[in-house]
Image (cartoon, rainbow, N blue to C red; front, side, top):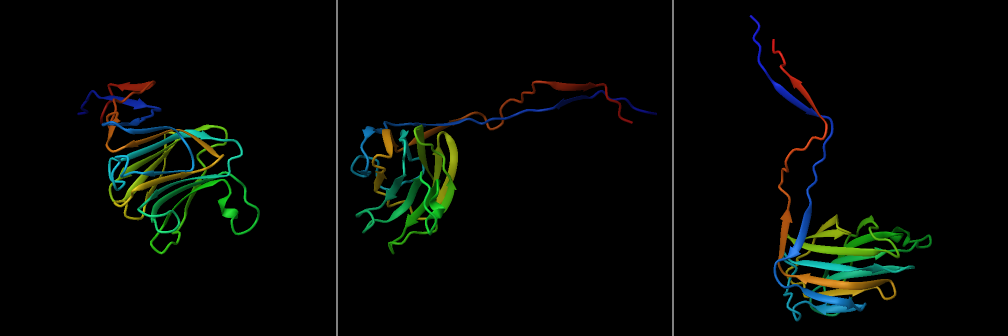
Length: 216
């Protein structure tokens, strides 16, 4: 004898799930308006503390000027730039086309790197350029566990960098004279991430319903 069982099967032809992440400062951030470049900020002195440790956050909001060549953002330890200070994190944005030769690899790209105690650059990590000349930009650095920095460019996750010990970071250096304009720099010691639910309610705009299926 054949048994009949009532089933309801919903088939969705297409759907999209989007998780929106935002980051806000849970305490009073340190804010610089119209920061001049080049600029070196003593993070310990201004109250940001030593180390780029989990939950710390840096946001640079500005404009890439026309005919920009290059700008840099360094997180450094104590000491003098390119002399005695370690640079565990270096973000370099190249906006020019180099002539043929050893530096051809720098054509219109972003490079992440570090400088060790031996005063030598490490292995460069190269990415497609996220910013465009003549347009606003937002660069966000989020400190994560295991000496990791999560980088966001224009509100999109851009890269992660995990190499050197970040516990001794004490300076932020930004340079790019006549190449970028910094509208605001935000230093946050405690971020408060907010997200939509990991599994948002299922939404199918055009479901296909099959009813009273027969199982043989």
